[in-house]
Structures are given as structure tokens and as C-alpha cells.
Length: 139
Image 1 (cartoon, rainbow, N blue to C red):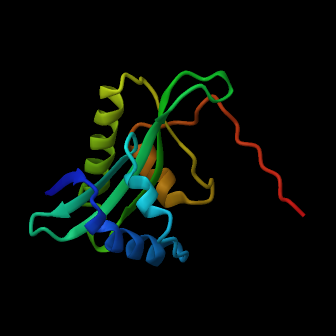
Image 2: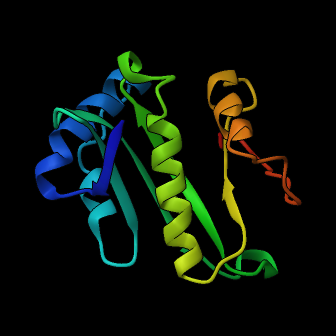
């Protein structure tokens, strides 16, 4: 069982370290920005108070004529604690916050080759949405 709570500045080193370890990219300047008012940034702790993972998102509105939706920007769980409900607890807590803001849809972007995160989001009930991401490499 995990406890989910809002992220605090004191969590940033653990958040940054976990993200760097799992993505291979260190971005310590990015994470403090997620603490800004109006954004949702949550952490999970084990029953013993150990850091277990995090999720970040926000409600965004009107991109390309779409109604407001909750967007999940990042989720990372300590690999030793996966498959124990930590990710689901974080996702459910974020969705509850989105609902409290009045949105009725949740969206995210994933790499189609990242089967781990695709499986996770599908297990949460997410399916392909109405939008198609377009991409262009710059010279």
C-alpha cells in the first residue's frame, strides 16, 4: 500500500534522480517548474515513508479546438516497486484532481514502441484518442 501526496520541494532530488535513472536524461531544472500553482505533481511513498514514484500533469484547454482535458506529462515508479499498485494509485489520484477541475477526458503522449508504458495506460482504461501526433525532424 502506498500513500499519495502533493510533491514538495524536498522531493525534487528523489524525483530527478529516479527520472534520470529510468530515462537516461538528467533534467533537474525541469522538475521545480512542475511545482507551480495550477499544475498537479504528486508523489507516492511506501508504508515506511520511502519514495516510490511520481506523476505530473495539468488541465490544458482549447488546443486545436479541443475542450479542456487532463494531461499526464510524466509518471515514473521505482522498478523495485512496480506491479504493486503504485502507478495505479498515482494515476487515480491525478484523475481525481482532473475531475475536481471539471474535465471529462484524460490524455497523454507515449512512444508507440514503449510497450511498458503503453500497457500501463491501457490497464488504466486509456485507448487511442481522436488526435494524431505529427512530427518533423529539424535540420
